[in-house]
Length: 115
Length: 112
Image (cartoon, rainbow over all chains, first blue to last red; front, top):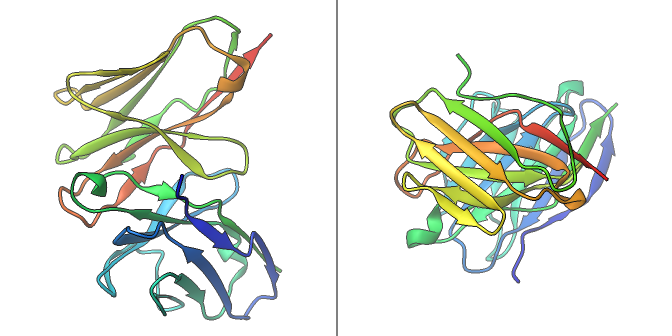
């Protein structure tokens, strides 16, 4: 069964450093998403991406965040200058086309710890 | 009012019990509804979509009441492996660009 993969599984970084989280969505999917989950809290939408453009972003997704699909398979989330409050689990998700648009499949997540 | 509201639990039930979870949502324009399951420190996994007509998948039954903006999940004959957090999820978009809104989850503990 196809699945979304994410690397790294864990990342520890110093405050102010840049991090890039990587995702490989399911191969025939067209819509890509990033969510985050702070420990003990709910999953929160960050951004959706389609046809090489951001289609929607949340208030959390400020100028420090960016997304990119650098090639036909990877989808990345960059945090330019990390803050302590960016510590969270970051999930990538993807969904297909037509009636399959509705179902989002999540990757295993990257646990980011900012010190 | 929270967009998606759930009782956080935990619900402690013995194996074989029937347990029901409820969820309410605030956006009447919401188009599609789901229950996801999340194990500790893992990703959300789709359990089932929820339709107005109600739907059943084995021991799991989901119901949607659009008038009351209420979603339910019933688990029959609980197994130890059902122990997890159950996330009520709502999508308010009706075209490709989705935005899933998650509840905080209801934690279920099934004991022997």
